[in-house]
Length: 431
Ligand code: AMP
Image (cartoon, rainbow, N blue to C red; front, side, top):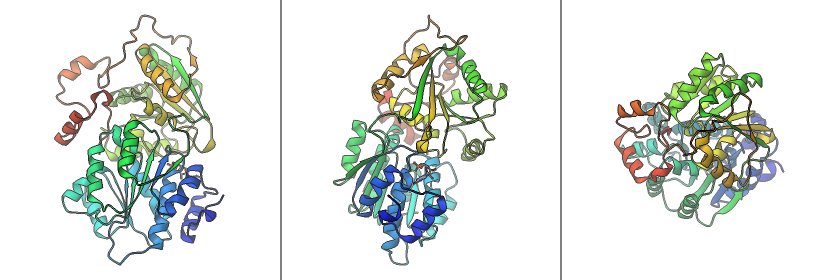
């Protein structure tokens, strides 16, 4: 199987060769033909499988082979849940369209809208957007998606987790009914299937990995440990293992900050990436991590979503996620492109239920280990930590805090109220 045999045009093949890709990844081989045929596609694929090229290449092929008038309406809309993912998808669109007469732009919140509006005014064929900023600019009359021919909903499961369902429904109403729809998701809950049903027409279903299963090349391990000893254990594992590039997940933004400070004090270069950080700080942390300057990147789930970090050897769950699907996303950061990876979880007594739920989802028992000197606390309660509860030091702090961490404005607050509270977390990085 080659990219050429998939029927992609010469300018695209040239861009693919420039990227150094030799053969299509499984999701690309499966998704590109039906997308080229103009069919709706529902794809099960995680980040790291090459899914971005899976939808971008055929989309660019279609747009360039069917050019429109000189005036450029937005003909393709790619909706992503986070700023980072939007930026990455946009970078890919630009690279793949280098030899085509296709213009693209990206819009997301948290930064000044002016340059984004200026880019759109020049005329763009492909717009990559996060839902909040897209609706904002549409409301201001600064863009129109009335002429969209291809709609891509990327990381649909994360969209729902972040409470974007209403926004997606609004976006759908702003586009013409006749269009091609592509939906990508790593996991398939009932809600995702319902959303797929409402968006897609007679879709072709493709999958790169079986539904809700952890990628097999990833070696998984659980360390049972007392909560108070987690920091010591992670420092020991990183130092003694001489790990040079580690992605660590915490459940909260404060947790990420606290752990970063402790790591730095222990002489391990670390940076945190989460929704309270400015876009500049997030970009800098990620660049440092990619270049090897920063050894440990400590992230909350949503901030880490979609990060393009090739060949990551180690992922550590400093805390397990309370939403089991997030575990699959997290460990999907390792073992990419056929390389093996290691995903470790530090599990204290209060995370016992989370672990059980995760094992149920992946239909796998994860091997357990205990490190001498970092044993679990036999007297600790197995009562789960409530989502949103800010752990050890929460009491005094929460009394002074009028708002939940996730709700930064009234629209968010309304949205939060409407959502299933059990699924809420306090580590959202909203757009
Ligand atoms: P994605 O899942 O879209 O985030 O892509 C994951 C990584 O795989 C990115 O760094 C891509 O540049 C890379 N990639 C995508 N397609 C291929 C391919 N056919 N061969 C090699 N690498 C690829």
